[in-house]
Length: 355
Image (tube, rainbow, N blue to C red):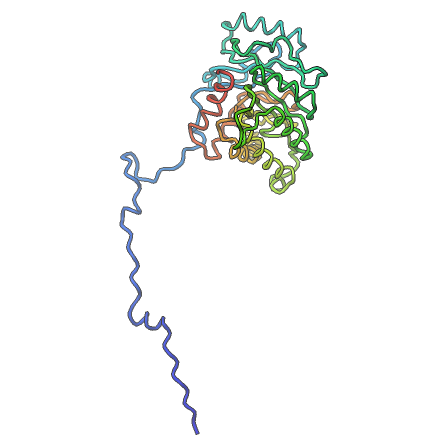
């Protein structure tokens, strides 16, 4: 006796095949045509990094303890130097008596410099028993050129907080060279944040506008000191890089804080623009962009200042023209356009030191 099995229903796809394939919507030909610019038959491409050049430049960090710019002028050359509209001159490592003398000479002979001196950075110490400022930093907020304070920071202390607060109350702009070992441990970052918090430059949402009037410019953190033996692949997951990302975001909350973009303290000379140094130069660019990216994301390009001299604590040498090209290319290769380049290389320094 045979058993009849029920006939299986047809698969939905069978019906589709019998009726023919479903017609897909057709895009107009204009979707595949480049925009009508009147000048090209191709889609527009982003600008090449080689073409994104600042029209004007202010070098916001030129270390020349004796106010002698001759060596710096030799390094910048004609192409780079022709666009320089001002420099910020640093009198690092000079004793107070020498600083007084050089400042007097600079003020008297300002018009004789080949390059306009926008500001002069004069050293003072944060670690003093009595929080007092040198006489050459008092009552200078309207001087021409502007007199700016410069101090080295190693750790937060009561005297450092009081001295910095005194400088900011005067309306001074203060350059702080960060030497608190931010790479080795998270404690260096926390110490710096403690100092900045103490002088009320933070401006959270609930702030009542109680920050002090002066500005702070941090050096030696963009890029920070680094160990070149640590490969970029390993650096991506290294604790020091994660700390860098999180703490630069925290520093950006201090609205009166700017950062200098200087040759890094990597215990090696800045690679030149020659063909022989191309491999090393490209390696440096990749590392610089890793550190520059989080800073731009946190601070925006409006609070980054280009300078050609490394931190005074750096053991590596740097040529001004070589660093300019390396800094410009690194910034441009992150995809920023002309307005960002103009801000970093000119506008931001004009805002900090020219106002």
